[in-house]
Length: 370
Image (cartoon, rainbow, N blue to C red; front, side, top):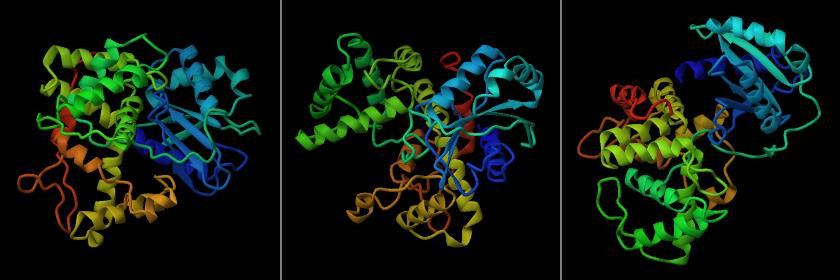
C-alpha cells in the first residue's frame, strides 16, 4: 500500500506535465477523489479546472481478460483509467498492449510501468473524449478514506450477523429488518461499545434517522455489505466467519477488521498523510488537538486531498475539521501510542503511531486472502 501511494504521486506529476494524457485535461491541480466503494480502483484524481477524473489500478493477476474488464469498469465510473504494472510484470504489460492494442487505442486508458524506487515509465498515453463517465458526478466531493463514527467491533459483528439472518427477505434488508432490530438492541442496552460495556442509547426520531446512516456507511464503504440491499459480500461473510470462529472480542477478529479499515478503508494512507504533515511542520504543531486538526485540515485542502466542505458544516460548527472521529477509531484499534491512560494527542508533538502494531495487523492472515 505504501508503494502504491508513492507511485500514485509520481503519476500525478506525469499527468500535470502532460506526459500521460495528451489533451491537457489534467493540467492545473489534482485532488484525490474517493475509491473506497470501488474495490478494483486503488487511486483516483480529479482536475480542479476541467473536472475530469482518472482512476488508477494495479492488476492483481496476469489474466488479460480480467485486466481489460477492470479497465472498462473504471472508465464507466471515471473519465479515464491508468493501469499500473510493476516492472516484474513487464512481459504481461507488453503482451496486454499487443493483444488489445486496437481496442485500447479507442479508449481513454493509459499504461505505466514502475519499479521498486517508484520510478514510472509511460508505456501508453491517452486522450479523453467528450463522452463523460455516467456513474460519477463531476462535482462529487468525497474524502478518499472510509467515513467512521462510533461503531465498535462488537456492533460490526452484530450487524454482520443480522445481515446474514435476513438475507433475501426483501429488496432492502437493512432498512426493513437489520436496522430496526439493531436499533432496538441499542436502546435496550444489548449492543456493546468498544470496551464491552452496553451501549446506552435513548430513543428519538432524530437519533433513529441519524444512526441509520452512521452504521450503514462504513459497512458499505469497506465492502462488507452491498450498498443497495445490505446483504453480505464475500468479504463481509469472511469477516463474520472470523468473529464466529474466534469470538467478536478476540484479537484475531479485531486484527482482521483493523486490516480492512487500514487497507480497504484507506486509513493507512490517511495516517501517512498525517505523519507527513507532522514531519514537515514541526514548528506549527499546537498545544491542543482541536487546533492541530484544523491545521491538518488546511494542509489536506492545500494538497487537494479532501473535497469541499458544505458551508453549513462550518457555519453551524458541526465539525471544525474533517478529521474528528478517525483518531478515536485508531485509538480503539490500538495503533496509537498513548500518553497516560487514554491521551493520544501530545501537545506540540502530535500523534505517535505504533508502527509495530500496524505492521502486525497488516500481516494478519486469519481469513484466507480476503
